[in-house]
Image 1 (cartoon, rainbow, N blue to C red):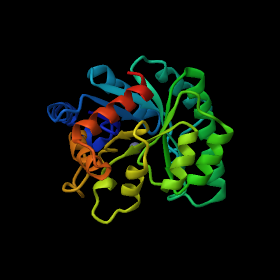
Image 2: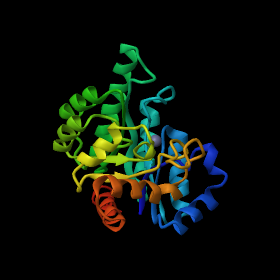
Image 3: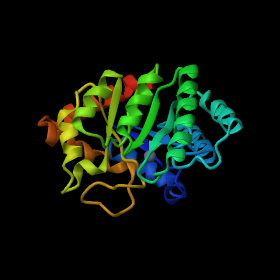
Length: 254
Ligand SMILES: [Zn+2]
């Protein structure tokens, strides 16, 4: 099993990274992609990837964390991204949930595009954060294609948009919300998702799956999410594991 999107570089988890990674492995999670959200967290992700064979890294500036972004900072991201344990640029994208101003959206787009160009230059896939910004993300990706694949992590759009994104080459990452009792759209999206485009993630320390909701999330909960995906898609757990593993390897080439 592969956790394609986790933040063990988050201060809530970092001090216990050793135990968290051991627990992940003993629960069958063999690979983890530790995702950066700014320069510092990207550096930490790469350091963790050097310390642990099973950890890989993604580097980039999250749309909520653009206060220190600059062309110089992006040059540093590029240096990190050339490391052979970096498997993606991310997480990058658009967040209109926390940012409502047109000027903020415009700024997010500028850095999203610059980081897509970086991913294309380095031949890397992209891990995308798109929150309440499905249409703009779609439009931007149509105009600035990603050459080496991308995942819409914690996919929260509609099943209809999913079909359109899939035509651009998207993979879809599912996590805790598919297990939440009252969540409907994530379950519909899992149901509708093509079997060759689905991957699994925790996005820890956030959004722990039921029955751990409200607690600190960890990669060891990946099997809980996969069980739910298997149930929704009416397939065996083995099949769910096999298909999400294969897709993650296709996308991230590790
Ligand atoms: Zn994340």
